[in-house]
Length: 197
Length: 176
Image (cartoon, rainbow over the protein chains, first blue to last red):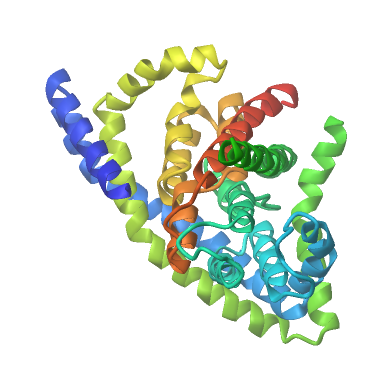
């Protein structure tokens, strides 16, 4: 998908530059963009190192597990098809916790582990189960406590209040997560209605 | 309310750091060694995404400097007006669900253009921080377990993401 978008961006840009006679600016952009890419990486490098280091301590020190234990009961009610004491619920909550803490590296493998665990409970292996869909949509709208990348970029752009957007981020992602859960139940009912009709 | 939010935003990062360190020390984790181990992984991640950022900045800059981005925004303006969404956030709204690296590059550009503390700058930051790379996540997770029929996953994720986008716009307007 990204292949097409990337090529589309470049072809659109070059053609539009050709039509509007801005070829010199396009040529300039070719060179300046590589510099921008490197600058952006350097801005992100510091915060990535610092945060990954701190999060490693959080994982080994048990903070991640503590959050997982506390929030487990909340999620157990939502995933109805998972039997009691099944490892799937632990994998799901651990993945949410990793996302919440912004553990980019660890979050993806944990998420895949949770999906594999849900797949063992799935009757039709090529079709997503209800619990899988719910897991995916919560994940795709996931609450992140501290979006470090965004704060680093704001700081680099000269913000006076780089972390000032945090409460806004929390409220906004909470709304989208709740919306995802509500919509899941709505769509589930709609699909059921269509099947019985 | 605004005072509470202000306090929370300044206390969140130091608070979390203290909490992590206290947990670490209490469990007798070799904190500094562990930190270094993680930091090294963080650096590896940065190196891994560097080519992505260069490639994406290349696309965005060409689109931007040629004036094509302005034209796309112009075309989408009527829809944005109907939904009362500021037109400046349209490129982000399109790119965010598709690619994390691309939207990060775009955010960096746009923060420089509009200023990080302007209403648009703040709204863009909140959108970036509170939404996910929906297409990527769905492709990778379902792909990993071989699920092909995803039923209504994409619809729910996209509508929820859109709800997050609208709430980001509203919240930034209500709490400047």
